[in-house]
Length: 258
Image (cartoon, rainbow, N blue to C red):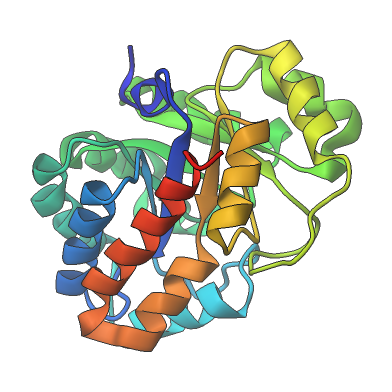
């Protein structure tokens, strides 16, 4: 069983997202350990980028703070190489095509393999253009995670049938950020995806409360939480790790409340 599959093995996965280097890389390392110790089953790591088109203001500002610290992709790889041996759960990058292009696609996935990154999510790469990245990712044992949105429509089946790792189901239209309501037919979307593949699927975009996380995990194989965690980091800065740990623990515990 591959490492991403283990995150979903006989359980509902809790998947937090953080931006590396916000407020600094030493704090990021501490946050990753807190996430792993408080119920995270897989962690999405954002590489700072100047134009993160899928992100709302909260994560956009985290990128700005990290870039102000002059955090580079090499810095992120070095940080991951230091922390990955200390956590038992899979680490996955969520970043943008330009970050991978500018680093060099093969060089990027080779470094992923060397540092312990086992998957990648590229929100700005459409299904039809993924081969350029996925072929080299596969060569270096990095799983290319597909995204399916309510607007994927007639492409849903083919994306699901070709998916690897897990499927990131986008809960609603627009960019990341906290929401009070989600797409009405989300349960139908998840059921359609699951009818086409055995690959696990998790719902993300806008989940900000323990109740919402539990609701999304109930209809899928897991919940992805980003902006709500990044808000905690923005509020507490270098003191954030313990606060993030408590917040994530409350999210994961909600999974098991009937």
